[in-house]
Image 1 (cartoon, one colour):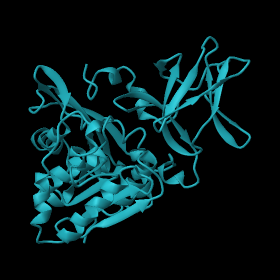
Image 2 (tube, helix red, strand yellow):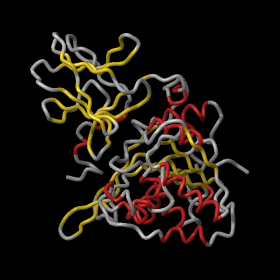
Image 3 (cartoon, one colour):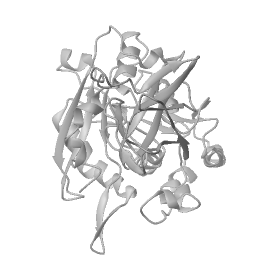
Length: 376
């Protein structure tokens, strides 16, 4: 079963389109508990012997209470965080917590309030739409799907050609990430309501491109450039009144998606006016110490010849790089600084509080969105 297209996520798709969990029925305790000034995980599993959850490559034990609940003070106290729940050694999904897709599988996440979270809150503003599109890929020879966000202005101005941003997720995630855990629609709706960004369409595809090798299915994310140029752009720009020219087309991505953005952006600078590199890479650093993260062999960095031969420092209207100050891949981001400096390319570079997670990437898209598709 394909993990990046239609398999399991067709069955529980509505869960991904909302941050809000289903309310537990009467008699079932809320899975989150606030007491003594802190947040606790509060799981009901009366017959269980051991309840644990994973977070940030650590495993935490829950303590059993007399009423059959298992509790643990959360190691984080704000923002969005994936957790992996196990009951007696078996991975489980709690239906009363939000469900997203990370680590190449469905998983629970917890959304806790934070002081500066208003920019991704659902407000009383005009809202855009999220559309699920399906297309047959010449590259994979299978049906694929993508998520398309259209701003509210899109339906109000049918004669206008809107800008379009092709936006990618990270390794182990898929096309729903920016919609659910990324909070993209609310972020852009709020920015547009405040007049802080131009209305533009966003297209999100699975970058975990699967190919047949030696009779087995494997992931080769470097094939995404083919998928983008052969299938996605022609399909989207033939179906929506978007793009059609360089100044109305951009690309961005986080982590693995940032490397895909570097590859496609540098291979096809005539196609994109703006690039966003979130918590990620210009070099294919994955060919080195990050090789265990991915499912295919090393890249060749051929796309970097573009920067080495660059003659126009303003080749892109916007070239944005952002990362969290506690990101485990910060050294690779800083390693790319030398290449950027040597090329002379004009960039916007931001280091945020935070680590390699959606809390940082929400900031990245918020700030990037305010820079792109602006009239000079």
